[in-house]
Length: 242
Image (tube, rainbow, N blue to C red):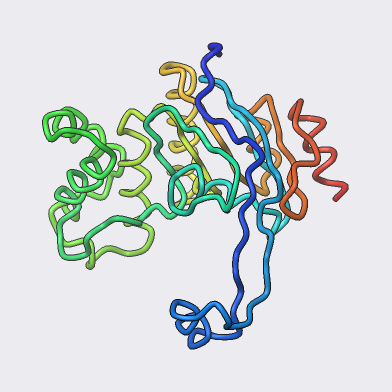
């Protein structure tokens, strides 16, 4: 059920990157404005708003600006100009293993990631068993994360991110983790929290079929601009023609 509360709003957002010839030139640019560079307009005058409880897919070819939009929502990077307002606890399923300490156990990393998301230890303790059960990595939960396979890290990362009671859930192709059974488990979990907790979903993907499962609204980006924002079926049709 959607509310009238706006939880994500972009107003005339521009993000420009400076591309230098090499790392040495980039370092020199810290001390001098005379070092030559090329401008890359990653996001070009983008405006949109998303209401609480909406599920929105963002489509675009590589380099369209999708990932830059996500990075600005999560605070990884900031706009060159324009305004961004985000109202709610964000859980981003982007790089699932980001924020893990390889020397700490899986259990310890649950607390670390929870604290980084703004939860108190007693809140994390309430969620601990649910996260452990969802990750389903057995006795490895009490082993250092450096001993995990990439698949096990991804399972733990997904389990933590999706169970910390997010208000805004951002998914960037992360639902392709693990084997088929675990993927289905992930899909069902995302569906469940969207329906039960009125979570806002922002889903960035090349998989139009999966997007249609979750989203009623689609945004299509081309070369840093939004070229369509509306019904998911129409968005998919336009994306497939680009």
